[in-house]
Image (cartoon, rainbow, N blue to C red; front, side, top):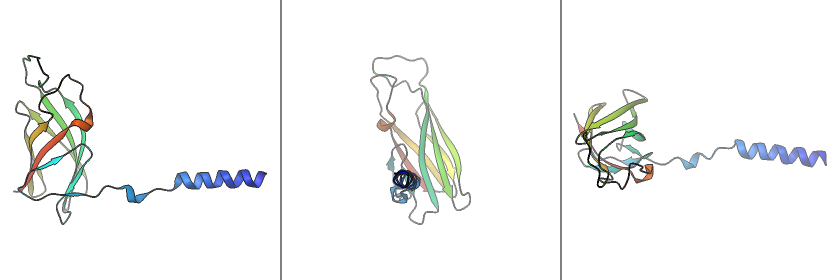
Length: 141
């Protein structure tokens, strides 16, 4: 009985400690100069993987885009990005998109532009992360 209990415990620990490495999502391919629509937690790469961009968390969304609400300030959206390039193996950067909710940043030898944030209009100030989409363009500098 003791051997059966020990074997069951050992196999349970072994099963829990195994990692499934096949669950990693592949990069979606970026074509320089062509707009692409990314969602939170998407990873996008150039074909040679010299640039890899993962959409992080929406840190702040104070956009005044709620139906039937009048605001004094248009607000902003703050979006975290996790970036890897040949020059820098890993770093975080942030879009601070104010007023028109557009921004741009340098990524290696490229410029990454945030062109549009969706949803354009919300029913209330609570938005599920899965509802966000970001139109981006990566162009050679």
